[in-house]
Amino acid sequence: MKSEINKMIPPEAMVFKHLKAIKDGEVQSSTPESKKWEGELESYNLIEKNGSTLLLITMDAAKEFENFFNEAFPKALKIIKDLAEKD
Image 1: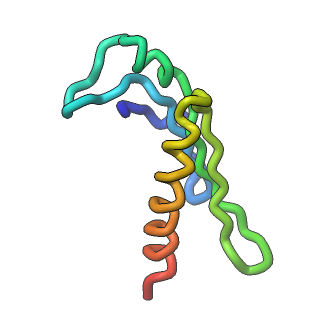
Image 2 (image 1 turned 90 degrees about the horizontal axis):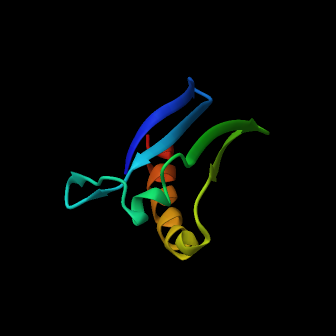
């Protein structure tokens, strides 16, 4: 996915705006597949709560991608958690 930073509030928030799909290392022109993502936002917010930090993610995505994110995000979030807690 080719994206741009739409909003950044260090170290609290980062919002990406998706522009185009990337396939086989090449930015795709406006295809029906890439149009599903164009303009969609993906937000990451760090929230301090009771001495811990909560990562809140919100994402605009078509319903058809729900299964992908339900499988991929827990794996990615585990890596982020492990890195954040590493000594």
